[in-house]
Length: 241
Image 1 (cartoon, helix red, strand yellow):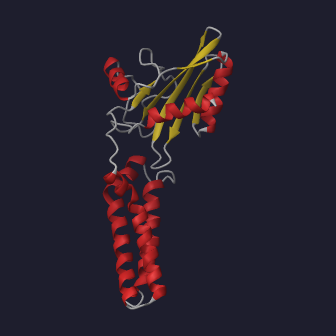
Image 2 (cartoon, rainbow, N blue to C red):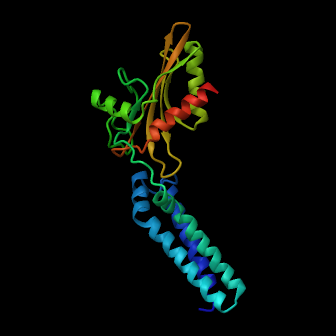
Image 3 (cartoon, one colour):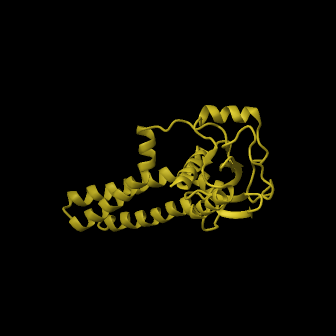
């Protein structure tokens, strides 16, 4: 028990590396995003609890023995564990409302933009790109009533170029762009777990200006946890800045 502080710190370092791999392993090509998400749900909180517990145990032991250096190491390990537990603690104290069980969000639910290049063979996809019709439209309006087409004073050509620039600035992978038809398809990925969502943006001339429509579809999962709606809001805000 003489070196339990060092042992606790080693456990914390190894545990932190494992936690990082769980969150970002898909980005490194180690596994599919859904695998990383499954590992997170099963192992992340128990791992964090073990790190925190080992660190606290080492801290108490060395405080009793008045061994400041080892106690400090145990305290650092405990802090690492508690830090990893913050998402669970936060969600427990302030639960996030359950997101709507939909994963296909469009600014135009009456005439949603249709994918032409991306299709159901895209890597890792279990969700179709076929729009769900009136039932999906009604579910979206109930869950995200603010999602709507973006109307702008820019000409259609200028709006298209602006939209393409914003998409690139947001880190989307542009899969296909058609400047003549004022449309492009892209893939956007979440920073954690690296889930892929496929996006289409279409610009339509409208009077002296234009209208920008956008649709985002997650490749996996019944619910996108609000990610596509949030991405549309972010895109529209950046477009207007």
